Image (cartoon, rainbow, N blue to C red; front, side, top):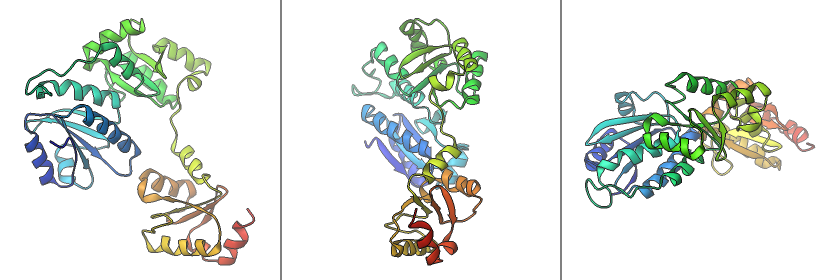
Length: 323
């Protein structure tokens, strides 16, 4: 049985569920423009290697709307878990540790290498805990999820992380009693939530509060990259940056093709960014630059304009070459 496949139609999706039968099927509702979906596909690939009797399915949410609507998919990435054609669980968001935990827990009764109903080899608890606390640069072990905290302390720490733009992943200790009890002993920390950075225990809510009040939280935990920071970084990736549909080798619209011809004939060295591959950049740059269309040309981080501006060849050569 192929363990990592892609469904491109409603019928193919139903056929895959039927083929899997009593074995666990994990369906990733994804979008090509979302980088977190690409990251989670890498996680699924690794899980597929370890869980030969679990089927992992990638499904483009917008390409198969009837399936997305049926299962109330409102954001990506979203993961649904099926057995016998019936949905048995759900995970919203890019949470690699929780995905791994759910796959391990739900696949137990599906039958492993020893045949139906066989218990898979049990991973040493300490090794599992080490893997979980190192699953992301900043790991929060909490009750519930960041979207739905299930205790006041967890809610407070999530709010602090969001207020300070901290990039973190989380693990719901209520979903796994073994982890919940084992981590207290492993870390010698008796309560939750617990925060780990680069595999090392930082502490709980009181410690995080102290770090926030002293201004040290941002130095301790990794910062989330804001869209504005990401746009500035991309614009300045090269002295001359062209945001277009496609790339230097293959333009994917007439306007982009025309501007490539002008740029190439000018002898100017430049780099390109394909806006079709990143919807967040595509929409965000329009607002950031106050320029509603593509292509867009930037020199030394400053917007020059679109095709009509670049068509003025003498302007292009005189403005760009001396920079």
